[in-house]
Length: 99
Image (cartoon, rainbow, N blue to C red):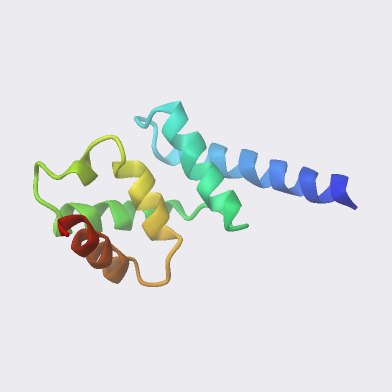
């Protein structure tokens, strides 16, 4: 039983990593692995279209020099993509960050 759960999680991680790496060819391998782990942690398949939309949300809701456009840009977009209301979550993140 436990081996099947572990095998299922590992397969999901690999599928997510391949899907993400295929869609985001210019992202660092580590960033793709982190995004894969985030999706796997929620037991979900990566939705690359939603991640792309969330990257646009971040660009629209932050300034050009925002820290959210740096090293954590792709990770933040992935976190947003796992939320039902990514625009509101980005607003909440910005509010907390400003405090």
